[in-house]
Image (tube, rainbow, N blue to C red; front, side):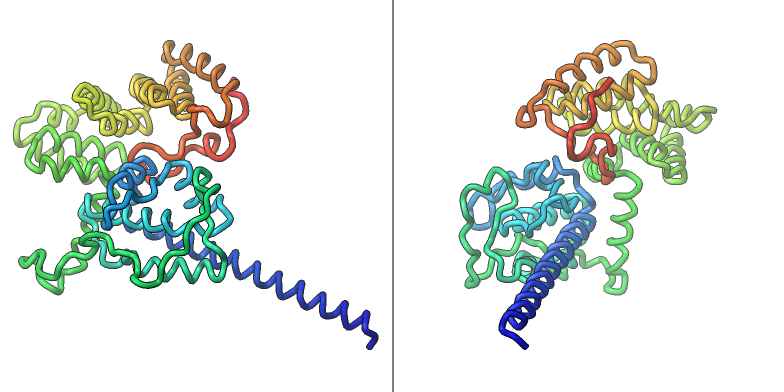
Amino acid sequence: MTISKRFRNLWISLLAAEAMTEEARVAACRAFLAQLNTLHEQAGSPTMSELEKLSGGTGNNGHQPRLLTRSTTHDILRGKRKKVPSWPWVASFVTACHAAAEQTGLPTETMGTLTDWHARWRAARGDQPAVALDSEASEEPLAEPSRDPMPPVPSSPTPAPDDDPLLPAEDAGQPDEHAQRMLQVYGRTGVRLMKDCPFDVKVGVSLAVIALLRGHAHEGVQRLREAAQAGHRDALELLSHPRRQQMAADYAYRCGLGYQRADRTEVAMFFYRMAADPGGHPEAAYQLALIHRDKGEGWSAAYWFRIAAAKGHHLATAAFDGISEELSHAHPGESWMLPTDMVDSSQPPPPSLTGDPPAPLI
């Protein structure tokens, strides 16, 4: 074999090895992102807005943790970033997920500590240098995370064995199933309302309406019967109304108005969204669009203006035309942001409103 042929064979072997290494790197990154998404589901699928708020506190060691901006978190979980996230981002995400789970009573035993996640992060990163995926932090290199001591564990991530002495050991799996079911039926906002006001009849009717609009008729009717027995007029009317879903949407809209007047905007948005979709309430969609517009979330506002306009809401039609004009001239860096999540919903935003800006709205 000539030298040139040997060199060529060696070069081909090196290229093949490099390709295999790149393939392994991509596979490790995808596996790690899948683990992050599983953690997000175990935390009850909190919205990007909720994660951003939960990450805004102070860490265990007194330092300010990495803020989980909605756009960055959305892109990472959807696999739009091609590299393993930076450790500060992962640590903040894990801590925020623990906090979200604790808020709604979900178990955290299987979610893993920061020490566990640090080991997973190192395994996924391999020998790559730590690279920040956050666009706002990509200009300054991050220090290599120290191996000793290991990163701090979130405060009380795992309940002590005697936290609930009345719970038999053989029933340890029941709270997990029950909490997951409550989250599925009522959403995170509904679960919080249930915990804050467990014996409030009005809240009971609101929970019934949430269950009905989310497609859980059995739970909704059961709560309506309980409220009706307590003498709640709306519950009695809802039980006998021939167009129960329509009335439920109107009730959800009125709940949204009440919470908005009480300056609880996030809860109001949740009820507006229930009323607008799947309830089909045009005024709820319009009010939701106004809130998104005031928050500088132009694409989300345009979406809900369009929903309301399709239902014949004349003010929404004019507002949709106006915001479409603004969005068509908006700069990518301006405050008219792409929506990264829907309020209190584990489902992704409509396909036409994710990723790159959609085609001009006409």
